[in-house]
Length: 195
Image 1 (spheres, one colour):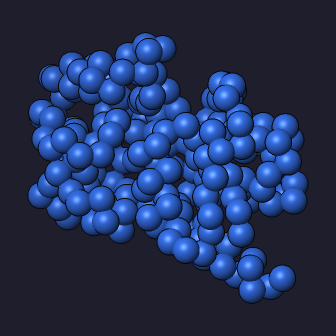
Image 2: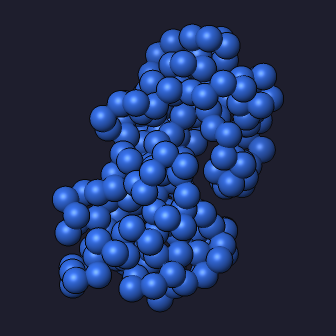
């Protein structure tokens, strides 16, 4: 089955294809000649994922899925949340975003946080959503250089390494995106068998 993953983020695409394996052929936005900025101006992760997926489905006619992910920090009332990618400004700089998080938490002992991913899947006009959550804490400084986004600052519960210090295959087993994708894959496998 061909599915469009509504992203231009090649890191996400590689991560997802690794998890999905051979069951599905993932197409990127570039593969379908979608070169425009997809709107994501909703107030929630669920809303953004849905908006992106329906944009691709309605305009290009492909079955597709889109995700939105947020880092939710307990002491900051769930910030940066839906604004994670542009927390420090519209240029979406991971470095600037991490710097802002560390500054906001500099006087705070509660470092509890979670990553949350919502995937919106649209097949033949019908939508289903899948959620993945991983709990952890924000480190006092960046560690590691793998991954992307806030990975160098986030240490998942039960591990001594930040996401950015983990092998991709290990991160995929426990990550928020990995958990949401597992739910997506289970659903797609069953969907495939029911046909």
